[in-house]
Image (spheres, rainbow, N blue to C red):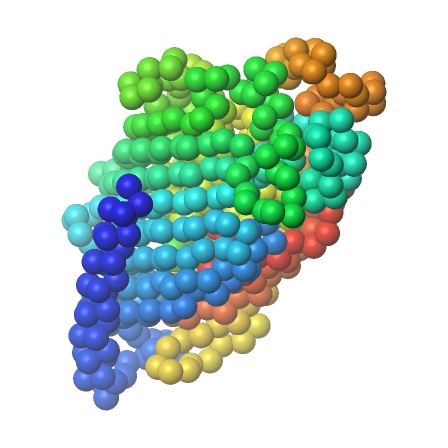
Length: 469
């Protein structure tokens, strides 16, 4: 699979490079004829290609390096800053062992009166976080020295692997949105998605530390039966989606007014593996953008909820937020850069969950540079989330009794799998800085901190692309 993906990505890169050359030549011809709108912004027409190095940082993943290309088609410019087509290709890696290979296309004019979104990617994560099920019901320890009996050769670096596992994911998603014949901003959507998960214990080669002799939480879940044998190594998930959408946003990437609502029912029949994990979920998203000072200051917030409404979902599929469109590289929730910023990545996992993002977006200044329109913005924010539908909670309460004979631990140390605490809000706060080009390409830097030590300590920094929503 890797060889086929790399070959496909190489062909796409060469195609985009040739297209970029033609675009630059066309743009040179158009520079003489500059047209501005009433805001003083240079109106973009036709193709606009931006090949860029990918340089970022994520406290959970490390430093990011690679390359990407953004391709826009603005048509005759009458819709600017909205576009007709957008395509993106990214090849990148993080220093903690993650690799991203992704292509997506967002097409508003390819099919008349429709929006077509296609997304395909292969992602590896050697240090994928796993903190257990049901939020606060799973304890989090900053200091794991108490787990000495769980390994033969204990060392201080054990903290870095107990809450880690290995995960590889292939993802394909296609979604089509069409407008209802009634209602200006009402749409229906259909989608087809496929995921292949390969999961297992953390596998890191390190001569200094004997990782293979140390237990991880994933292994304890597997030994106790919380993770069943027919799902422990991953599996396949095929999804059929049907959505109702209301969309009055004035812009897709940098909205300053309007609202977005999406209600999606996702059916996932288990006809590939046949392990009995057919299930259905309901996902709802509400986003609103309230202008305070014209387009210069906006209050934006998002509410997301997801629940299993039928069947039995495998543990590896719970991480995924089943929205119709995947605007971010990762679709995992809750915790980290893409949902509740500042708390441990994947800290809040359950059969159902909900989260809130609320932020102020302040355009500090605007200018023109290299024939492009630029804005600089700040976005202080507050995030919160929690499990709303538990997952195997009764089994979690009894899990330690299944394996306690294997480990000589005190009573205080037996809550590794179940803390006895009730679930509550997981909260965080922070601030971001944005550099926005043509209202479509956004470089983002955000810093956030959990407001509860049970969700992690220290300041988390995320440097990447785009607003969160």
